[in-house]
Length: 218
Image (cartoon, rainbow, N blue to C red; front, side, top):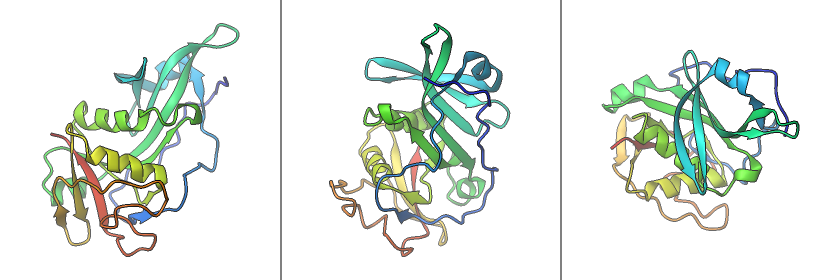
């Protein structure tokens, strides 16, 4: 397990620009740089605030939000390293940006954030961590979550799974026309092949560039 000396300030500026396109990207997303897997407990406490927990299988993961403007999130647990030093094992990290214009135009009661980036460590994928995290944001923090511009295979499957949940609702909106295309949408099941996605929402081209999915707080 590796440690880090930085405070993980890997943020994008909070903007309200809507330049992203709802594009189905081929394959499974792999970041250009390796995800940082751990940090010292001291760095964690100095730069992050604990905001809750979520159950993932037999594990309870702590969720932290960056101090200050609070636009980045971490989920993980405190572990012992080989030399018995306590480290925070990072299982998930996410960057977000606020979308005030979407909340205002579509008259959502709660704030709307765009999920700019979400990564789950390779050893923890397939355990539902991303799904539980989205639920936590909507249910516990009362924040609506809008999908990012590029949706790879696993992200599309995650959003499809979320649309089936009875704990949150999901809208399909057109950000250019300012219209709700379908309230409380339930997406068609995503098949095993990359191209087996719901064509109401995604396309490999820019044909649906103005469409967005939003998870709504109930």
